[in-house]
Image (cartoon, rainbow, N blue to C red; front, side, top):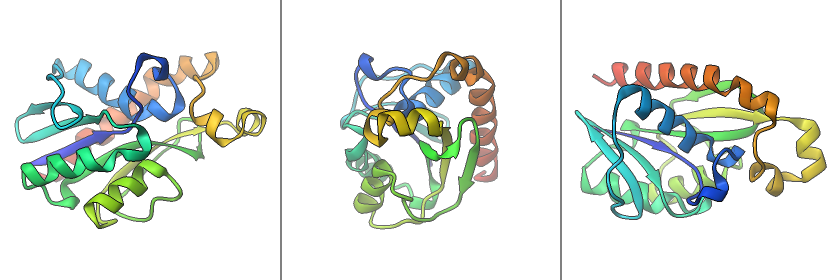
Length: 175
């Protein structure tokens, strides 16, 4: 069993914000695959397809770890079989970076997952949201909660398609 987790904040007011890039990626992935989200369970929106569970924790971003831990424990999923898809403002907008394990790099969602799983040994796919001019103008907190700019929104379909390819590649390697 594998678990693919997209990080974000619950609520429509956070749609198309930088911090919800993980949610956006999983929504795009499930739409192109024709999958349907289930009713919330253990404070997460989820779906199961084959031997993979897709998860959008419904605690706020900084508390994403408990729903991940609950699903991992219930379905007996090893941490190395959990892929976390999250935003990263230190990467240029549109840049993707996969790591098999590592530190949180300051990402509070990853910190929460690390704390709850008690390990850093889980893969993560970071989606770059970096825009230094906007970040400097807004500050870090307002930046991650800000909406994508119009020019960034134009590029989202291409970035999301690439993200789907990365998810599919990871899943295929786990067979």
